[in-house]
Length: 404
Image (cartoon, rainbow, N blue to C red; front, side, top):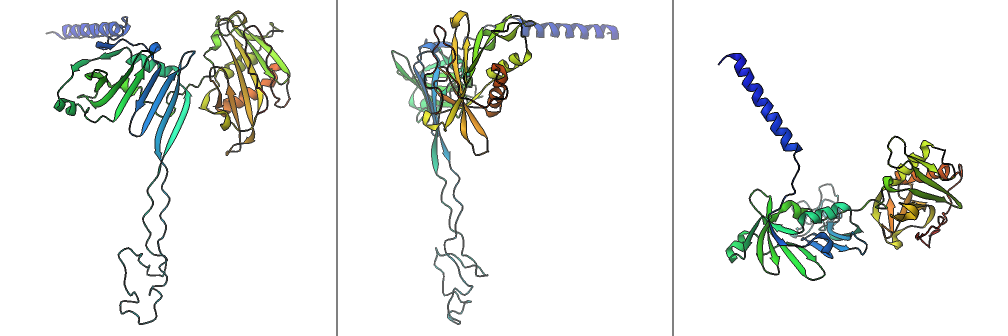
């Protein structure tokens, strides 16, 4: 074959491969079926989900207004104390009179006695105490990622339904003494998935569904997504509202309050945050501050008793739609009265969405609070306890704002 024909064939193959690649990535994606439907239960029907493992576990409970609260427990070993000398060996001859023993002064050594050091130092070190395990518990609101993990598993589908196998098969599937379980409940029934071994390749896991005792092959990835540990699914937002959806917010600092209006909302080249009393003041500082406020991030959910003495320094009322008809949130920010171990002041926040106090990422919270004076028109002022924002129809500010 002539060279130019060979080159032409190569070009045709390359073009065909390019078209096939484009088609594979651009065609509409169909949702995977996931196999045979076993339980037609949706995420919205779940009231409780618990994952149990030998050294950790989690329990999610549905919240009345939507979402889930998570309680995650883990067994963690504390560092073992350093080994300590069991006996002071004393001088090299054991403190016996001269000539008391012909072996250098040591009359004898019991099997469990410390051995004296040649220089008269301490005896051999005794065995260290074993490390002790303690239970660490985290409580927090679950993020949307957790709800998406539930939606990947439910409705429950099986890649294969193996029915009720014989005992030897149960053993080979690792289901004779399962160490992991997934329990879930609806308003009508309770279910248990006992997790056994992974199939060849690890893509699927053998599980036994109760009631019924059927053995199924279920996606390992979907099961692992519900094996919650630590703060994997901690909700870090203070509100479900997004900046692009909010029409109005009221910033309160001490006795001063200012309304900011989302002007030209939805127009990327024109939208701005402007004072309600000065709609012509399109200052970049307002947009920048609102952006920082929406980036505030929760690090930890706290019980009231765990919040150190603090002062409420800011309140922000968010409203979407006329008078908040499409959603609203009243968020309070507090600053600790004393320094933490690093010599810095911590910041906290609470809202109806968080359901209680959360500890904030300090750097972002400090910037929001420090810049607030310029937003409300109180430049140079010190942190002041925040008063409730002006009430509007439907708003429910926290009644116990102020000093803690």
